[in-house]
Length: 162
Image (tube, rainbow, N blue to C red; front, side, top):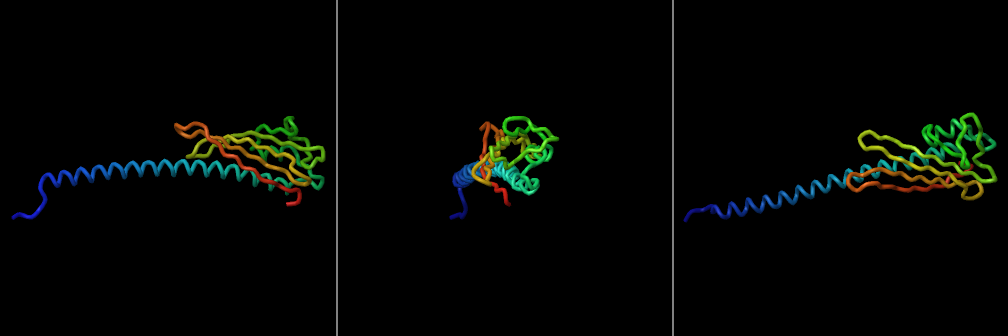
């Protein structure tokens, strides 16, 4: 009696190993796609968080009267793109009262290109929330492969006395 495997046993074993290998490759590719989607979403969240941090830092640059010059406001909030204060375009030479008791609305849109990840569009809004408190809202949009447009939304509160 000879010891060893027959040809049929070897073929069955090889076939079964091949099927398992193909399944494992599919799981690996799915995992890589999930990692990429997570990286892009994390980048978008970091961008939104950065805009909220810029709003907190802006409060520290205000004059004692609670105003900021238009060029600084544009540089902080919208990366020198179009920004609106109470519905009107910001003039770089003018001062804007962030803590005006009559109410304040600051809106901006912009695009940030992040190398290796893509372009992220954002919409920024700073509105009154309560006395000495403003609400900062950030929406970040991006295109994600075959899925299409995706977005995240973050809100935070900033106070006059940081």
